[in-house]
Length: 124
Image 1 (cartoon, rainbow, N blue to C red):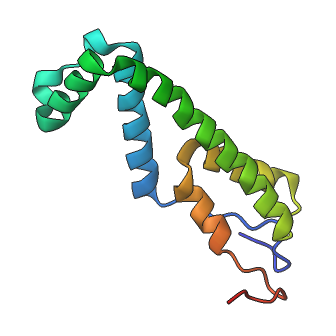
Image 2: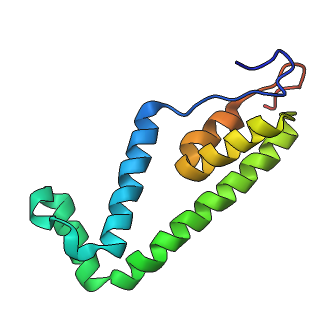
């Protein structure tokens, strides 16, 4: 748990968000890199939408996949700045925030942004 000075504050994202993001990005990766292996007919409306996007808008999916990870990278770098701003100095804790934010995006970054270290004035 976090020390009282807040220099090693870390909270894990909610399991639900971790599951949603992991499944979503996994399905996105599957449709972009192995679209021939996706069982579209077994996935109902999601399969129909994915099939349509693969058939008619594949470049958007392909470049969108890279853009998604680029956005996650920028969120993770922003998490490092927020850690500095909030006085989280532990290198291992900052690395945890970076990795978690890179993998789960706003599901992690939101927890860090909401954190109010003791002794710092709260913005209104």
